[in-house]
Length: 200
DNA sequence: CTTACGATCATCT
DNA sequence: GATGATCGTAAGC
Image 1 (cartoon, chains in turn red, green, purple):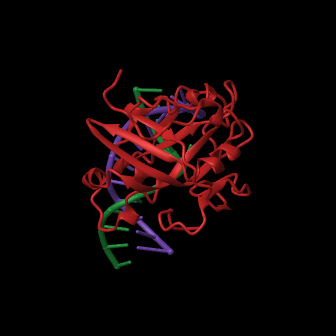
Image 2 (cartoon, rainbow, N blue to C red):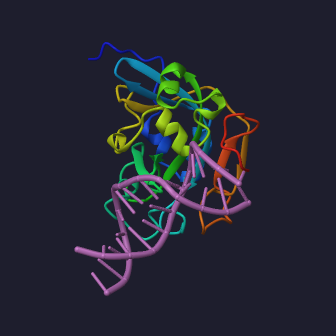
Image 3 (cartoon, rainbow, N blue to C red):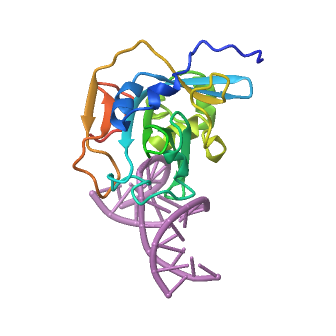
């Protein structure tokens, strides 16, 4: 039992147990919830990218299981956090059924609660800048290697994703920052959002 | 053991 | 628009 009761109801595991692109689209508008100490930070997901397994050259899982990407092959609904360019920690939600690799990269969020705490973690002039990139939002919400493997369907978790009734208008484009697999339109974002990472 | 590199960002020009 | 930062992985020797 926890004295903390959350307003945000977590998404169930079946939500993630389907093709990465379908889960990616439906993650838009949902709420990323982060608890640190006695603070709650919450942010709306406004931009994502879908990654598959063997048939996706841009995916970490394209050449089979390794120690780093093993969690992508495991059961869905868990966090996959890894270091990119030696500098930034990036947050993914594992998708597909167990045994099939897949993940959705959280690329941008719109802060909605605990904004002061996020600004402490990542001082910026404009709130628009708080989570407008995959490495930015992890810094603002204190997400790092410690959060790798957390259960995103557990409302008692220090990190999870919650339901929302919003049904956003979705735009799509090619994925960002990859060298191969660019022909696939697997980046999704909330159309018109001011909080997405810039280039489209 | 060694090395090259990457699902990026901030800070230049 | 270009570049340097900075390090865990995984592949190569």
